[in-house]
Amino acid sequence: MLGVVARLNAERGLNLQFRVGIDSGALVAAVIGKRKFIYDMWGDTVNTASRMETGSAAGRINVSANTYSLIRNDFDCVYRVKISAKGKGDVDMYFVAGVKA
Image (cartoon, rainbow, N blue to C red; front, side, top):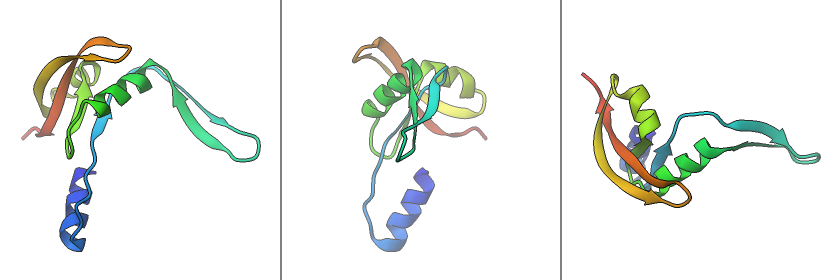
């Protein structure tokens, strides 16, 4: 995602920026609605991912300790800090630095 946005910015003279937050765990997903169908997800994992996104920086991928434990063998990550996340208490966060060589 970051590569595509960087390429679009270069090709089209744009300055698009976004931040990503990822958590891993259980959640509930469903299609809701009677006239207009919407796919939605709920649960603690979704809420934590939202906190990771809020605590991220533009152009960075911020992951929770849950996700870090799953990806640490394949991706280089940089420990950030333990922050107080709304409704979550203190949580560890990591920036994804890239794919391991």
